[in-house]
Length: 549
Image (cartoon, rainbow, N blue to C red):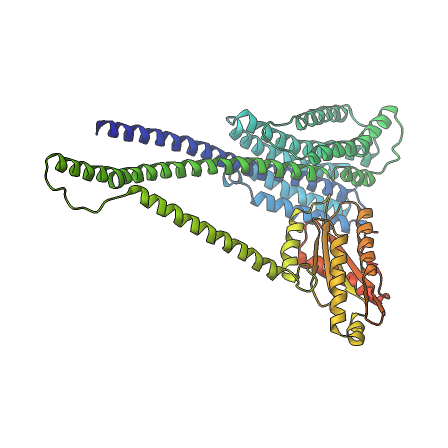
């Protein structure tokens, strides 16, 4: 009894330690994800402010009669900035830095609007408007530094990913600020001052440092290959378009020449050179969030596994005790009682024999029967599912099966490999039914289903979604390949041949409508392809509409 008590005590202590350790890892992963999401919202505001500054600069230096398009984009950018401020954690919303940033931002917006529609002609008013927008960003960056302190105690692996994310945000902010330095000299058509030259050089150095920081890979974070490719493209694009403009202004300023670049042209071209920074930031954020989410889910699974294992162990231990008592100890006690009675030459007690092995054998046979029945049920269920999702006449999917399979293709689609939907409708099919009867029409449909399946790839979805209407969906990133595949489908229709008893040969053509998407819905793709199919019918049939240009 003492040994049993010690085993129970030791098992309880071990169980508590395992659960505590698993809970600690899960709590840490969950808190890390929460900290990341909060810091992400903090950096989004910085990016929104940088975007708004870029549109504001364009608006200031665009002629009043030509700035409505820029004004609309600025208003949209301001709405995004306001929304990102609303998404900030409550602790930062209440900080003085954020309050100062919002107050300065409001004044800056008023100054921008005044310059845009009253056409500020004096450099001082223009400089005040630009400075107010810059000050709003600087006040807000104090809030970023406050939030950064929360990550100092994180593990180095986790901290590296956060710092890289921060470097991307600062890179976007610094590149925007770099362009703001030369706006007033261009506007006033004067050379750069020594202070402006120093500011340009300082920001160029900081930008280069941030590029280096962004290139540092964080261990344990799976970053897709497309990010590194997009990073190189973004850097190359900024260097050749945005930074090249800065260098040109520096060279002209040093030589004492005249600028042949207007300030409104510079503002637009420089802002355009920064257009891919936000995409780069979002791409990295998605990968980083998935990494944190994966770690949290792994910790949660480990915690659940630990709890389930302990429950199973305790259940097995209890079941073992009960089993030993009822199926082994009791039979042994009865056998011992009978043996003692025999040795004492007394009549053994009349009890039914207890055969523990018989129960196990019966249970095994029952489980075998259950397994056999379960396999039959699974096979029957699969047959019913296929029957419910397959067109009986053509052996391709029906509309129900198509919608289910097509959504899986759309979910896997990406901008590099979008989903393509091809709708085809047999030309003049009604005349086939009217002339030779529906059985012949059914043969045409069956042959067409076979030919389309032969032309399709393994991962393609082929279905009959209406009377004589078929749908094919696939993923493809090369427009030439898309055209080639649609041509192959068109040839499949032309290969359909039904020979009648009088040797009459029936051949068909079809009209095609094509659409594509990588983040849209099946309903939207179907509507677009249907419109293209209608156009093909209207333009003479036996043609394809909707292919990429």
